[in-house]
Length: 60
Figure 1 (cartoon, helix red, strand yellow):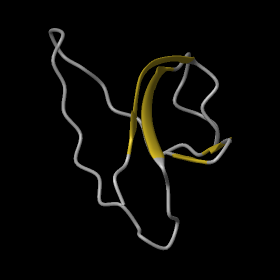
Figure 2 (cartoon, rainbow, N blue to C red):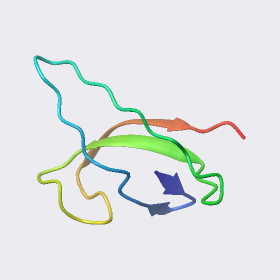
Figure 3 (cartoon, one colour):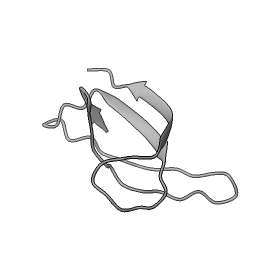
Figure 4 (cartoon, rainbow, N blue to C red):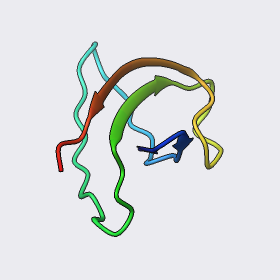
């Protein structure tokens, strides 16, 4: 989840056989503007630091 230039970890999900899914409820108080998926080296940390592979703007 990204607000401006500030990313925040929204959790970790694992894929199986090349498929995966995630369900996430947005907290409107945080007012994020972008959702992104990154390939992380490990599930630790409050900020993503891996390679971004997908990003999309969140409509208001």
